[in-house]
Structure formats: structure tokens, C-alpha cells
Length: 130
View (cartoon, rainbow, N blue to C red):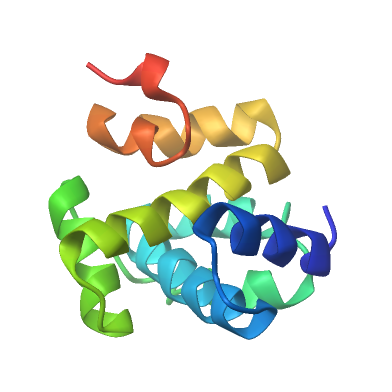
């Protein structure tokens, strides 16, 4: 999936005003995800994404994956975007469900396997939730 196509899908799913807003939300969500998964998985994921999206997933190789649930993930997204919890959850879902469409099924399974089951809904995969 091309960069502009990825952002167009995020914009449509998130109902954002323009491509710039979709790009900003995408960067925040991907950066937050990069801190939640292992550095190796962030690197594997970035290899399947177009151009500028790769940058959002760059993390220090010495960094350890942080461990927190969906609520904290959305709180962190909202803190950076200035959104309330429900809006941040909407934002995360717009980006992560697009991400699920953009990467291979194997890569998606590896990402989701590193996260508590509640995250599956954000990726548009509620059948993988509890």
C-alpha cells in the first residue's frame, strides 16, 4: 500500500478534515505502538510500510517493549493529540485497522500476539478478542 493510499484510508475511517490531520494521527498512533511492541517487531513492521510511515516506528534497539492495556494506549494517544479517551480510541482504530490491511497476515498475527486480546478490536479483528 502506498503512503498516500494509507493516509487516504485513515482519513476516511477516522473522518478527518484533511490528509494532514490523518498524517498527524497516524504518526502518533504508530509511535505509540512502536513503544508497546518489541523493537524487533517494530522493525519488521516498518519493513512492510511505505516511506514516511517507517519513521514513526523507529525505536532505540535497546528499548524494551512497555506493557500496558488498551485504555493506557488510548490515553497516551489522546495525551499527544489533545483528544478525549473515546476520540483517541477512534483515532487508534482508524490507524490500526488500516495497518491491518497494509501488512501481511503473518506480520499482523505477530503484532497482535504481543498485545493483550483487547487490542484486536483496534485492529478491526474483534474475533481475536476475549
